[in-house]
Length: 355
Image 1 (tube, helix red, strand yellow):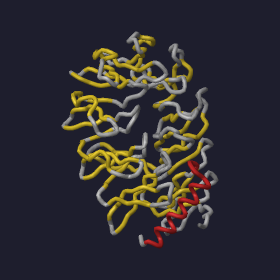
Image 2 (tube, helix red, strand yellow):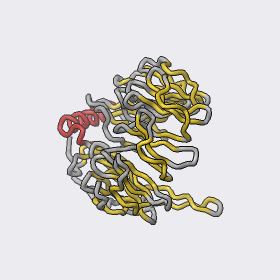
Image 3 (spheres, rainbow, N blue to C red):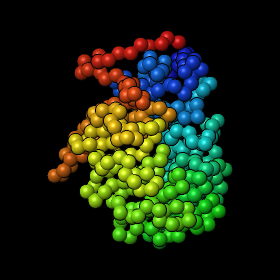
Image 4 (spheres, rainbow, N blue to C red):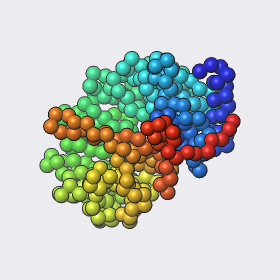
């Protein structure tokens, strides 16, 4: 992209951000991505191979240039930065973005300066001021300065939330605080994270229940699967591998009718029925967005990523199902993408806002 085109694109983004702010939504047109407003009007042209939702005012993008995919960012200032060394970047969390360079992970700060050198095999997003990192299969935590505050001695780890993190050692899971003190003993086969005062735990018999921060069992371990509490409800799976939702008293609030349910967010939850069909339900278990997608992720800031196609590939005697197509939807199910026909023409067209 020459300087003139960069200026035009940057000016478009700045104008769009000032006008629409966090309401900018990634929009797919054929194989390329841009951004639109809530009504579906395209305000950033579809020219990127990847466009993620804005996070802390910055969007991660990827653009193909000279047959190479470059990863970069769209900034509030309107500047576009592409890093030829960076193969992947994650959205900002606590003003830090995880980046991957030469198969190693590190972090850039909000000024896009590499502040933590890519030297880790894996990293988590910053949460509660710390990020989990791993080297040679051992996990620990670092702060924003890259200082190791919890040594890399664990077999696995989850992000810190509300001052606590689940970690694994000697094949058992427990919970630590930011000083690496043991809060919940290492006696569990698996464990989630504390949310709304409770965390799901898996016992040696492989059944899931819930405990509080004192380690007391509050919901008996009778489930095949349990997810963290979110918006007052937790997803659980019964003996027949059917999913429903319970409250903190263990009372069933959504019947066990689904193959899978993901945690509630923005008042809705992803639910799956037979045939690789995904839709969204409310807290009464009522369908709000039809079961017509082949995969879906939970809502975040009013939008959710969904996939509208399923690519089947034979592997030996079985099949691999890979979701494809689709884009983002809002809480009312409005779709923000346009498919192209075989001739290349657009099946559904949107308005384009000139800059």
